[in-house]
Length: 182
Image (cartoon, rainbow, N blue to C red; front, side):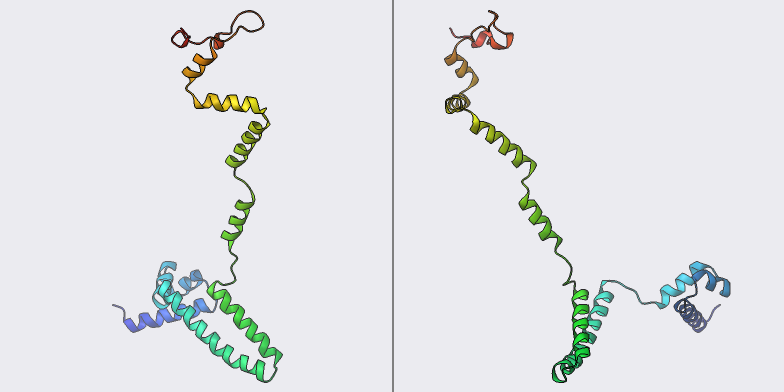
């Protein structure tokens, strides 16, 4: 049976060895244990980094930076100390980086690019509209009128297609029997 104190001492020893740069494999050989046991010891002694721990560390660091800024800002202004001024700028840059204030807004760039370039659908619609606008006004009026009526009504008004140049009507030009005018 192992003593809890000896386990704590062993875990602390493993942590110190890892912090000094020794590999987990070298430590496992030295202590005659597995690499998994070395990793388990590290898991026991190192703090857990969940979101709450991250936020706590960020909050502490921001508080420390604010305290430093307070001291060096006063020096920079009152003593006209350029080094203190530069340190204030560095502190402000670090705070901005920690809070994500310096990250570029990719969404705005994407939105700007999509606003500048019409979609494929818009380009096709524009091409069709340009073709439509090039038609003579009379042809446009006929096509618009045909679009307003049913195909049956259009055939009834137009009558049977006339034969083509060779004297015979094309099979596509002849309306079905039920659509022929009476």
